[in-house]
Amino acid sequence: MVTQPRNDVPQTGPVEYSLEDFDPEFFMGSTLGPLEDVQDLNNEMILSEFNNHSNTNFRHLQFEGDHLTYAEDISQFLEIEQRSPLSFELQHIIIGVDTPLERRLFDHFTSSTSTILTTSSGPANPFNSIVVPLAVRDETLIRLLLSLAGSQLLKRYPARSDPKLREETIRLHQQARKDQYQRRQDLEARFPDHPSEYTDRDLEVVFAAYLVLCLYEICEGSADGSGHEHLASAGRILNLALAPPQDSVGLPPLHCNLKAKIHPFLLEFYLYHVCLATVTAPFTPIDLPQYEHITHLLGQDKYVVGVQDGLIKFIAQISALRSYIDKNNGELDRYIVETAVQIFKELEAWEPQVTSSRPEYLISSFYKMALYIWLFSIIYPDQKGHRKVQANVRHIVTEMCEIRSGDGVMACMLFPLFIAGSAAVSKEDKSLIVLHFETLKKWSALGNIDLTLEAVKKMWEDDEAGVKNSWNWVKQLKSSKMSLLVT
Image (cartoon, rainbow, N blue to C red; front, side, top):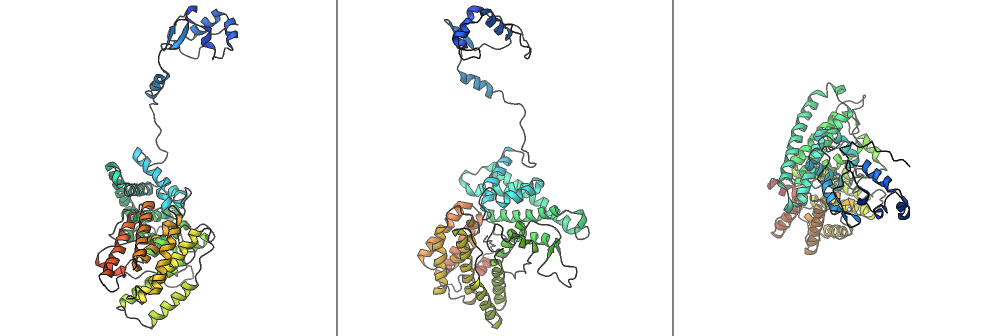
């Protein structure tokens, strides 16, 4: 057998070894075979093979008696390996996710923040499957998602907040908001006369960015009305995409086509938030177009409550009725009574679509009972303690105990909890309401939950002080110069 010298490793100079340097037992674990075979090998061949590897560093080997041993523990090899990393590290594949902190924010958004924004609480939620792909090719939207994740992280762990995290969250948000404002101005100036210059994706991304801006204000617990402003801006972008039928005359009808193919989920999410924004807003709500793309969602997964099954229609109707009564100085007339009765009859007849779980059924019933309480409060502002109201409050607060922390429906639980809280009078119900608020806050860490509980407790204080119509939250918020989104 002839052993050829290896040529695949550069030769740095031979290191000669003598036959006395080796013991055959050293090769028991080698590829040379069993010990008895090793003992029969020609020692000259072994010596030749080792001298052919003379470039190998054997400084960690030494001889103790007739045996070859390691001079140092294997951990030292590991330490050497750790001290010699690759000189080049791969950057994150997504543009805008560059620093370790941005990477942390992106991972937090996809694994945590996105799971508490809709009723889909798994990793395949629509923010991960629909919004993130839009953001990958839009640095403004990716910054907004990162800042939203940062805001939620700071709210969830306030005691362990990192100053660098806060600074980066603010920087990302301010930069994205500035860029968004500029491109909305450009869009509104050029799109009406030059629509061919824009793709469907252009409008969709700007529209989605305003929804995320609104979510940021919700997470921050902002009370300055900025959340409402972002929803209004989203509505203006949507209006750019509206195209009335060719044979229409006058103002666009309620049933409109969309020039741009905005994803149905984004429309559903917008309609849900813009509708619930009217619950606490002291202005006349606008008509809500029934965009044809919403029909594509029927039979598919529902990501919020009320859009596909028609509940938001009642929210818009009750909000409009309240605005009308306010303009009428609280006095009832024939129109108010007839409208209230008609809304009640339709609400009474309303049934949720087929639900796949007990929590889905419960959340639909919570909305139905909350809408009843709200309608009742408009007609009977001084009858907060009436048995018809308190029966619905009791149902809501007790059955909410069946909702487990982490159930997707918790993303839509704030509205019925707010309404039940505004009408609660018993200590037992109030205690349960506070407990539900705490559970909700622990789950999502959204700042508007604290703001909503603050408004509820103020109504309790007014009621205990004998203030009439203490559950008129619009009046209370207006006098406190506060804005509130209960989404």
